[in-house]
Length: 375
Image (cartoon, rainbow, N blue to C red):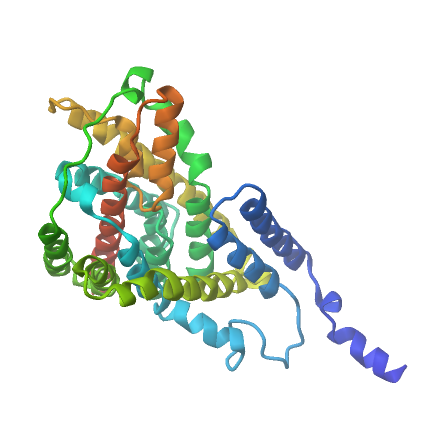
């Protein structure tokens, strides 16, 4: 009986708080959305399970959590807190990405740039809510809808907000099919949604090989702070397009990115311990993140409509919504909404151009913010 009496206070149930219970329910909701609704299951399953893991109470003398030096989760979280995992994710994305559609119609790059407006307007909003400039910069990047970029910048600018920013960024990436369609339909007419675009031209192998090299040099010169992210992105793409490193490209786009996604998702989820996550700041971050994402979507659509004032070959404004960096979900949503209006309209290839441009744009924005706010 003495052993049982000593054991009882060490159980998770003994230390369970309402905050822990709420976060465990949030984690289970993430898992449910991933399995039942198929919302980014590769992200939400490990993040949701990580939230459950991170909110099981334990005794003070047992180093088990991500913030307890010496624990297993602490060392896994090192890849998040020090910005190691995001560049590795970018390496895999680069090895999976085909930039041909962007190269075949370069003006669509402008839509990817326009969608970054959500980042900078949200920074202004965060400053108005008394966040520091460093915190505002880290929060604003959520508008790019790019989880790895948000984690990378938050680790540099506001490590104490990393958990909330990471979960918010990945949550909105998963909710692209829910958030974007109402905005797209509100800002476009039926006639605009029915616009057919020309098929992309054939891009030569030489162009595809030269692009990652030239693009990296240009982007790195503009924003040296983006070297880690864009260097890995374009290296992955060069491995894919060179034709002589297929084994490396195959490893990057499958084994490597899958392993890193599991570790990143689990450790990010586990960082959302109720004592550090359930704060007024976290709620504000989630609210600002939602506003940022909606502004980014609207900016892309409205800029496409503006471009149509000067173009002979019109752009379907829906394509502008793909300017956020949620690859390839935003492009799929464009295809879905376009076909709902006109079943013969295929916009997926055209939407991929601003979609991949948005990845580059958000990484450049992160590099610029890091340079400006830290120096």
